[in-house]
Image: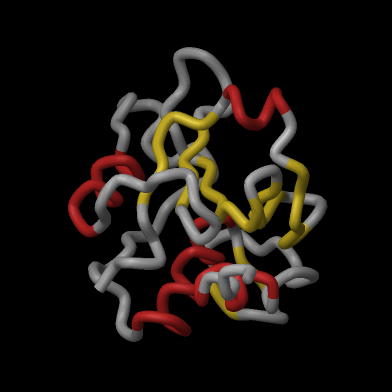
Length: 141
């Protein structure tokens, strides 16, 4: 008997096709990678756990601060590599970790990227190598 799909994955799949729009978090209208997580959180858990400050595309890079990682640690438990986990990526060596996605299957994840919008992508070896943290988005309250 198969396990039912995660509520997080079900919600995230409904965002596929949403255009990429910096700082937005509205299904169908636009979102960035953080906006996707914020929108899915609201659908599954309700009110967001903390306010999100205005941010630029190079958010926290000049200071070298791991703002997303620190914020996730404040409200989420570590993930176990299960669908519904929040994935945090470091896109290049020495940079801060600032790309987010949701594990949708053992070998796939849903995320928003400039030029693509929200997509369900294969978790290829290059993507998997960029993961620096996993958090339990499903069990968050």
